[in-house]
Length: 349
Ligand SMILES: *[C@@H]1O[C@H](CO)[C@@H](O)[C@H](O)[C@H]1NC(C)=O
Ligand SMILES: *[C@@H]1O[C@H](CO)[C@@H](O)[C@H](O)[C@H]1NC(C)=O
Image (cartoon, rainbow, N blue to C red; front, top):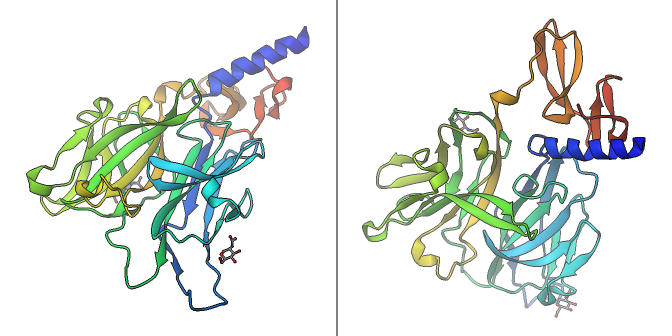
């Protein structure tokens, strides 16, 4: 009977904490071009390239993340290699015997005998315990098979500071995306997501803002209804230099999530979508909702389980709050013992 009681309270605890205690995945790949110089005349030449990738997941999950390498342009990719959380490995038939991934903690992709002229490869890390936009991140590198004097042109190569942004409800956030292409002829878009469907696929994105290329005075800016009147792209000069930096005003709690900055050289290229297009990088926005901050007024000094999330605790001294802290992953705060404890020893208040 007692065991059952604890089991029920642990489930309730998970549900109430879900929206607050997010674990954020951040991926950093070699954001540039990886060349293979064709030296067919050299008998010692080995066509082998590496795509470096690193990641952090904070707080760390109990199970290892899924590592996926994909090829294509942002939001239109196919899996070439997948190392699932469960340990299962999938390799796309075209890559059988030609790909390997160094380790789960350093998922560098080693690729042999790739002779496709150009491709974009993505390193995606998914924390299966945190589905959707907080748990998944990816970054890409362009592969270029150099056979003559051809050279990558007009690369979509964007970057932004990936440190999660803490915003206040009602406040303003500026996401400083740099790189390009920028300007009137560039297509610039920001999307939010991915969100997961009930079927379990996490691949649907919301287009926050989209600026089409300015060919023939056709430049248009489209904004998602959720962000109407609240988002803008940076403009340094009205006709020549539109940059991807995004400003969101009057932040709402529902704005919390992952935002991707992405660019194309121009719309006329999007039908063929060369892999030099649609690079992307993402950053997470977290919204401090003042309504959920616990108060220390009238409370004796000590540490208290957070009312919205029992995996967090806040410290009170002299009636003032000294901030909220997270317990290590998998533990929840035991107010009686004043420490982080196994979930089955604790009742979430
Ligand atoms: C790459 O191609 C060379 C030459 O055809 C071949 O000898 C080698 O086994 C291939 N390596 C892999 C890993 O497929
Ligand atoms: C973007 O740049 C502006 C101006 O330099 C700065 O105030 C803002 O904090 C930056 N945004 C982020 C998310 O770092």
